[in-house]
Length: 453
Ligand code: URA
Image (cartoon, rainbow, N blue to C red; front, side, top):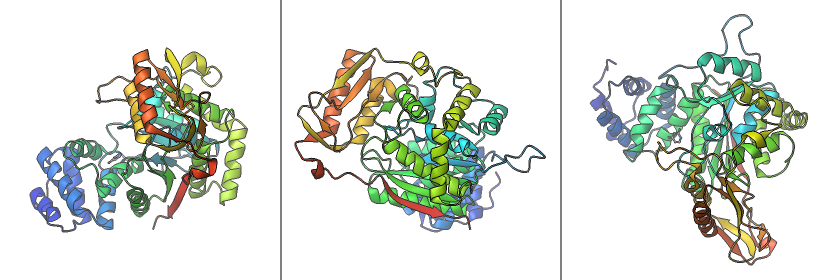
């Protein structure tokens, strides 16, 4: 990269609180992607952005530059018969515990006429990752060739895969350097990192699920709200209409957390064995927003009616089955998941120390209990045990006693189960109160819609 201004002069300008132009940001990001900026310069730039922030125009320019630092998938203008006949749609979540929305939403949108090229990530910290969950399915290939990926998106309407080296390469380097320079928690860096990867998939519309509460990535509800608003604004200004939902993560979204256990939950929902609960409500609301943004429905009621019909008819389940088989998993996973999904050798209930109602949860600690069972990674090289996790996790306000446990632990050993039991008892607060005394959090706290300019 040949810089018009010395990179250190651009870093100096940001360090001193000046705004950078889109051209200057473009040069810096190109230098991150091609290695002409040194690690020291990238770290210094990240710290200057962390300390001084970026205005809205800079955040958009950074997002666009990260998006354009590698391949940007194109689904149109490919020639007769090659263009996708429907909108290209996707969803991203800031991550949580028991958040298996993607597993259900992708196939559900496909069953309604959308196309979902979903590039997902692995578990991070206390949160689970969609790729780790899918790898609980024997044979599922999260890294297919580009041709296979494109073919599956066209034929099944959905493919959930891992990031490739070609998509937003500037983010991979920048994120790794942020991770070791105490610069992860910066709004413009988070927004451009998340969106740069997503928008590189050539989307017509995006829906973001920004979590708020004790299991959320952002430390306070105010910061979650700020992230939701900034992300919707930046993505839309970068040309992709985006709706951000602010949703509750002060308890696990599904009543389970882990990898195979969450795939089972997704199958139960898609197969119609479970039709209520917070997971369904959040997934259905996010999916309705996508159908509206993609013009697959003309109003909210129409979107919900279409979704309900495609779930009840089994069309969404059928898309999931096609995606799994298309990526190397068993063709009969839905009918015979017990045969394929791993089960832990120890499965036992964890009872609270006293009877009462669940009044509060440290959702982050619940997620960390799953990580310590082996369901997540402490260091990137850790190998995941897909069988372990938690099921039947009691919800806020639910009574627990000698009969109804806090949850069931699925563990590799008695010692692991014992440790997880102690962690759960510490993470889930139980008090002797009446039903009405527990204030239940609002599940969908805000919807922020932004059209592209
Ligand atoms: N997830 C990302 O992909 N990037 C961030 O910066 C934070 C969360």
